[in-house]
Image 1 (cartoon, rainbow, N blue to C red):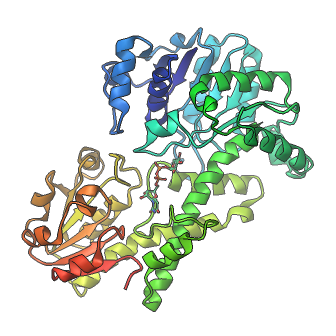
Image 2: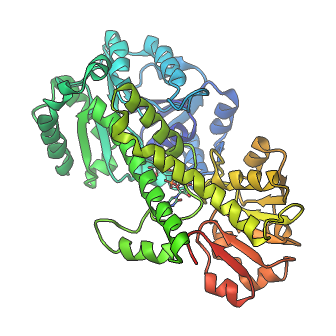
Image 3: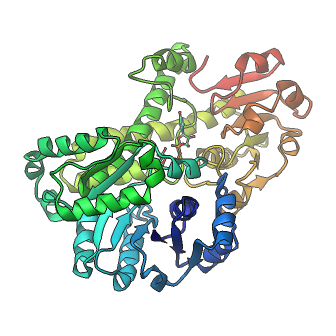
Length: 478
Ligand code: UDX
């Protein structure tokens, strides 16, 4: 199939390359000339395992190309829109400037019958407004949220846990209706639930009769786009636009809540001498809870979870339902407190005398397997320590270049061992294998000046470090 992908940032570049790798003819479009030049040369503008290979393959095979000209979208059957929705400068709400601009620029090139598939994370109600804008062209707008994790983006795109497609239907709720009152939606909850579960539990992917023809057709086209995943039985959930938008923010809100829950337990553990890692293991054995995303530590960061929970809370306020998700403000607050806590552990290790102490910060990326430093707890800790007068050196296997651009005031060292040499204390803030698995306490001992280690990710073997004479401090651990 001929596809266009508007927006070649993290989401779009991976989506374009992944779609080409499963046989589609794909054009990626972005306003950033430098990005387009890099992608056209088969180079990923950011670190993502597996992506450079897919780009090179697709560009060489001729079924993947990149351009700054929106006119190249003309003739594609499906147009994916994956532009950014950052946090607004003066509020927590999502900034829809790029989404609106992308749709407006695309409209002149749409043909009747085309599908516009929104992938960006947007406030619920956005798709209904965009659908009305697109309607006069004869194209159909659907919402197809993306759940990829950085570091596993290629795998998550080609072989996702589930596919969700919101299509315009008889019961599509327009933005004005949503703002006007939720009672209207309540009437339809049971029928919508029936429709979603029917489609979701049917691994052959057939849609229920409740869908109008336009929605049915759009869902079929998306099934064709994702044919390898659909053929292997990946749940394919067809629903209305609002539900599809909400699935994405609800999933991220749940994940963030799970992390902040365990970090709240870490705070209680700190007050009682309990060990949050053992607590997480113990509750995680309950299949209803599960151990994943119960990693207590310095908390979540990145380009999605922090901004998405804030935008969700802001949208809920607009809808008059702020109370329903007011817990997300706590989730955010707990998360930010853990950054302070990690820094405090370093300060306490020096009995408050951190000024002039050489502190090595292991990690800058918001998580391993990524060079992304957006809202990174690791860099936040580094900046705070420097603010307190410590002599801070940061190292990271991938993110130094990005970190240097954002925080030029910090000192960076590429080589891990060079960074550790002469340190009075070490803090692990991104659990790269280079620190978690490959750095032995004995080797670290041969490099540092003082044997203090703060494990901001609870990723080290505390007993092994203590056995080597280190003062080990974990997060929520005695
Ligand atoms: C997230 C969602 O997982 C993904 O589905 C969505 O599409 C985008 O947002 P991502 O931002 O790539 O993906 O990172 P993720 O792996 O979810 O980690 C988010 C943050 O939570 C990281 O800073 C990570 O270090 C932290 N985290 C994760 C914890 O602190 N503890 C955990 O147990 C798990």
